[in-house]
Image (tube, rainbow, N blue to C red; front, top):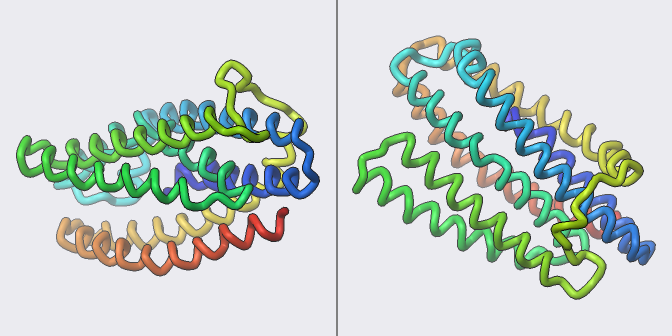
Length: 242
């Protein structure tokens, strides 16, 4: 979450900028912003993959990850970040759809990919006994499916959000507008995740896999509250921006 926070913030920036352009009814700039957003998602995914591959183990060591699970944690991160480009493409693609008030299709795509994730987890972990590697692989496969679905939707759009793959490029002016909104939003998420890292590092110092597992289970429950708040935030962003 710490590593992806900045780009999640930029996805919010894309949502705001495109929604504002919808309010202006500036169809040409909307289309340019769509292609710029997908460009940022793809290049950001490549950058994050490289950063994670180089620094993942160092970060886990700095967090005092228990010795009995550090190899599994490192393996998970390597597999997960090898497919992080799909996560960013989905986040930016769904931000584009949300910018014009379409929150249903991103939900449907995530529901389909989430269902696939559960099924693949059961197969990879219980049947194939792939442990953590199976969980990570199931995650990136399901995220890739959600990215494909959202990109396919944009390719078949009839309005100014229509995506033409060969036109994916960076518009510097629009990218700067996205960053003006997205970077502060991303930093806010980074600060939030840093506080969680401090707490997690303190728990890790007990060198107990049981304590780590208990905290992880609790965080999953806590996320339900966060997601509920975030849903209204996303809706408010679109309305006020337009």
